[in-house]
Amino acid sequence: MTAPLIRPALLLLDFDDVLADFNPRARNQALAHSLSLDADSIASALAALGRDAVTGSDPQQLDTVLQRLQQRLDCAISTGQWHAARMAATTVRRDCRQLLLGIAPVCPLAILSNNPAALAAPIAMALDLPGLDSTRVLTAGQLGLHKPDPACFTAATAQLGADPARTLFIDNLFTNVRGARSAGLMADTAHHAQSLRRVLKRHHLLR
Image 1 (cartoon, rainbow, N blue to C red):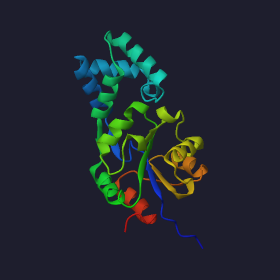
Image 2 (image 1 turned 90 degrees about the horizontal axis):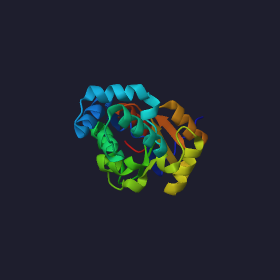
Image 3 (image 1 turned 30 degrees about the horizontal axis):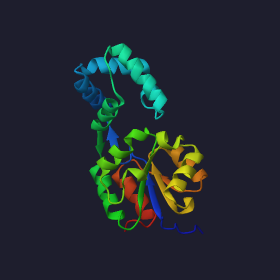
């Protein structure tokens, strides 16, 4: 007989593709606007660098990307402009946020993302959830570890002062869920509000 799931003492969630959607074209348009360039030029320059190069969380990698972009576009680009464009292209899923608004009073929330450390505060501001400030938005850039490495989840729960066995982690990628489980966390996938609701109900966080 399967043991009943315990109610988590911490809800730890991914950000992108769970709580928010990212539109690369909108990022290109926002960056183009801040640089007084056309979006097609931005898109072509980024495509030449490759997807992996422009999605990393390592500050040194980002510096390299921006240097190469500056060379291709023949203009200066700051990390602030890059991050602002990234967040301008990010839309919080209102239905998912609404679910978390009902949970925040009874279960602490935190975010674990493979984003750069500089996005912790903007992510917290975009979500605008009770008790979720930038100190509870943990990033790969800050931890120096990436999902799905089990060590990333161990470091995250330690920083949050949480028991891994009483922490529920939710991500859209099963490989990250598997990494969390290897670190002793409860973990499951969610891709939209319906699946998020199902997971939360299964773990007794929603009725």
